[in-house]
Image (tube, rainbow, N blue to C red; front, side):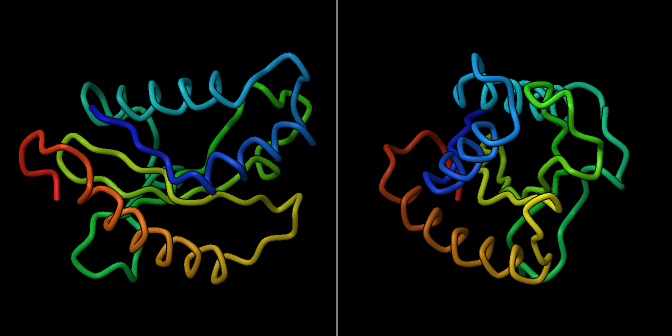
Length: 136
């Protein structure tokens, strides 16, 4: 399964980890953990309950999900303080779009709007990738 996070998602996640995580953890390690978790969920067994990972509404024909991350890099946080994220999935492709946390006082409606904007940006970006089957 291909994993193409939006560059701003990487920035958001990096900033969150720097503020709330262990200093020795890199954003790349966290991205690998997220990728592996989603790979396990979609390719093998549905490991997350629908309250934690489920289809998002309001994205039209696009397959977008919310995913309430639990970052092992931030062990001092309680479950509700970890970021909520949105990602696009199409066939063998996952693209993380955005994330934010209650600890940062996010509003879900704003996070959804951000996800819609970034979905459009990622769809444009993904069209430029070399073809490996019909991902879009």
